[in-house]
Length: 135
Image (cartoon, rainbow, N blue to C red; front, side, top):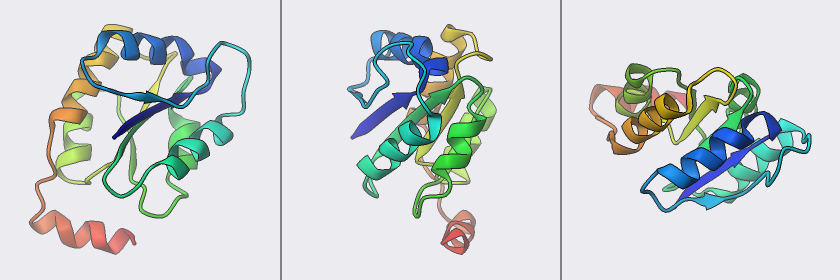
């Protein structure tokens, strides 16, 4: 299952990604541009996920939501601003949540980052030990 959530600062980008991506994504809010507290949205996303799910979280910069998500057990949220960081977040860090900044990324570029994140597999191997150390 793939989940997506945003605060008001990421709402427009979230809507764009839902419209333009070819993935089946469950929208957990917010549902308009009314101001909401990003920790509440990020917590909702993390609490909705199980070990096999993937999440996308968006706020104005992606910073606040990534900090919030990474406070949850078994969550590895990566704030990505380009293809390379999205690829490495999956390959080497087995990230299960992609954080994006709605006010810092062009929508089309954010879509390509999302595609890279979702299409990249965890390499395992030498990285597996490091992932276990995070627990």
